[in-house]
Image (cartoon, helix red, strand yellow):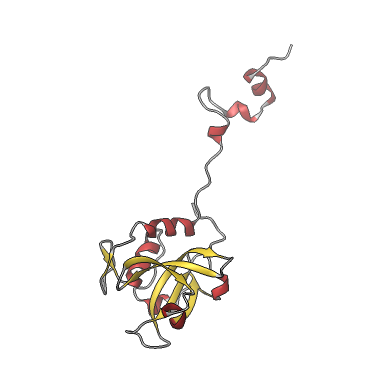
Length: 172
């Protein structure tokens, strides 16, 4: 006579045989880990409203490249200190191919026209409107969100974008 229930599962060497008396099949299924890009975006959002201070690297205040260096550093990714040096890292990305976690670069009054002077990180992509939202350290608003293209300040100053992480590989 064949035993029933858990005893039968153990005899058949089913996956249930690996469960303890207090565990369930649902317990044995791991929750998916958020992607590296999502973790960076979530971590960056914790600093919304923090003050902009030129040369500051956080966590109480930031300048733009100090902010991106700090955020990526939280995941062990070392970025150079300045926006101009960060622009030399990673893979160039067309504006239509931006993904969460990409760095987006602009000129600034301090850097001059056509020269990198500002950086932010893409936190969302709206394919319907062909726009992205990025987080950055703004001189007037501190850590804040901005849409690109905006038809104004940032659209006129856009230099390019870089991918410094491989967004297709979820890092646990």
